[in-house]
Each structure stands twice: as structure tokens, then as C-alpha cells.
Image (cartoon, rainbow, N blue to C red; front, side, top):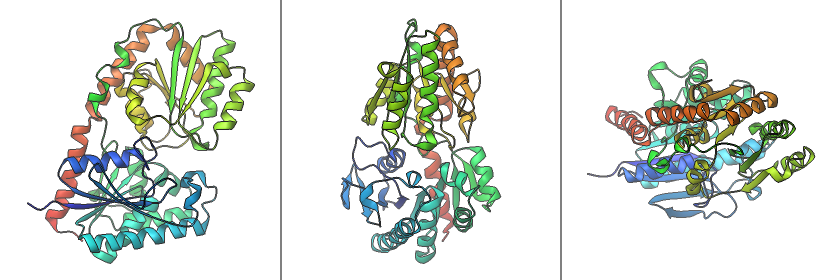
Length: 394
């Protein structure tokens, strides 16, 4: 039987095994390779990447666009310059159309509605191929407040064969922008979490938290509001709480955040580890007590799902689909993204109450295993592809 050929479009994709930017897209691609798909990825070129390569069976095709050498993510570029975004979209469509026709692709799957979904929708129209798209958070959240982005989103949503939203609040936004309910479904995360990587969850570690170990993983950029986490840590010092905060990730705000930690007198208590090999994240999480996440806009953060799989209670901002993960008082606490006092108070509470902290971690892991198990989620994606291809949609 001939393999199904799928083209995944995403403006963000890792450039190496150590790179975590867009790693969930790579996880999806690799999972499909393991399931017997012929997988091609079309993505924008970033510094340090090859234009053409095969990695873990995934055939990667990268295209250049105006400004690619700066290596910035779209979310880091204020105002999204028209020349940069326009060239990224135009080059992406040309590359996708060429690939689909040359390799005789069967189906396209875009990650993010804008710009990936828009590129896939146009490519699908020109090549008469069906398109699936995943709404991950920032795309539809921006569309809800930007008329220009909303135009791109509406165009895309009306031309999809299927939409996967990673949370119910995102699906509601997509429905408001024009997707048909019959084509919309919620699947939490692109491929879910491989629970086998978290065989020794932190919730089984019943040691005292006399020095509470805190962890954040993610980009160091404005929407992530890591400054709130550091300010909360500053309050811990004034309360006499012994702690260590590990910050994993990189981004344009790192120097500002390091300066903030210094100004609050907690520089020796905060460790900026920079980029860490994603394979080492489970071990890092298992050595900690509490996971912190404070983004001001999200879909369904993979970092939180990973922390829950590791058996960590989570203190996070109540935005997007986060409350679907962090059940307040059950698997952690949901607060406002600028509430550094609230974050600090909850950390103090968990540092004194080992029993509650451990129980929350156990409940977090149980929820992750039930809802985000990789084996179940990848099969749901494949079921969608097969259904579309069986119907012969174009």
C-alpha cells in the first residue's frame, strides 16, 4: 500500500535537536513518520538551518524570506512589518505549491491559522488538495483583536476541510470567525505527551520542600510575562522563603530579566539556563517542586502539559485554554498574569504544605495521562486525515 503523503506547513520549526522553537510541530511530523506517512515540512529559513534536509525520516524544505537572517519569531517583531510578513507568506505559498505538485502530496496540515493556515489554504486552492489546520493560540487570539489578521483568519477558516483547536476557548473564537461546526473539533495539543518519558514523576518525591525548587520553561519575550514570575520570586525573599528559580529558554528579554532579578536582590537565587536539549526537560522537571507559567495569551501550552505529566503542580495565568489544564485548587492555581503577589502567596502555601503540593502533582499527572496521552492524540489526527481522504475532498 502506497504511503499517504502529507505536507506540514509552519512558519516555525526547530533547526536542530536541541532547538525547542516549534518542537511540537516536529513531534507531530515524527509521530506521523512512525505511523507510516511520507512527511514533508515546508517552513521558513532560520539562521543555522539547511534549506533542504532529512531528519528522523522527515523531509524538510526551508525557504528564505526578507529578514530571515535576524532569526526573530513573528511574535517578537513589533507591528509585523508588511515586507517581512508579505515575503514570508508569498515565498511559503510558492514553495508549498511547488512541493505539492512535484511530490504529489495528498493532504496539507498547517500549524497556526496565520500565517501557516493562510498559506496552506491558498496552496490547497491552487493544487486542489484538502487542508487541515491547527489553531494553537496566538493566531486566533490576535485575530480576535486585529482586523487585518481577522481577514486572513476568516479567509483561511472558510477553506479548510477540518480545523483542530487545542482548547475550547479557541474553538469558540474560530466559530465566531466563520468555521463550520461540522468541520471543527478540539484536540488538546498537536501530538500530546509521551508519558513514558515521565516514568519517575516529581509527585512521587516526598522530600521536604525546605528550599522550594521552582521552574519556568519557554521563550523570554514580552507575551510570556516572565517578569511577573521574577517579581513573585522577589516577594519570596522578603518573606524569608528559601527558593531556587530555574528559567529555561532564551529570547530578547533575557538581559532585562537578569537585571530585574539583580535589582530585587535575588540574582543568586535565579538561574538562567538558556537553551536546554528538550530530551533533558523531563529530568529537569522531576527535580523541581512547582512549575510556573505566566503568559498573557495562550492556546494550550505544551510546557504546562509536560509539567503536569512530570507530576508538578502548576501556578499559571488564567488565559486561553490554561484553566482546562490547571484546575484551580486541584492541579494547581490559576491567577491573573500580572498578579505577582498572588503567585508569591501560592508558592509560599505550597512550600509549607508538602501534602497539598504532592496531591496536586498526583492529580496533575493523572489528568495528563487521561487527556494528553500521545498514543491517543496522534490517532485522532490520523482519523481526521483518513476521513477527509476517503471523502475525496478538494
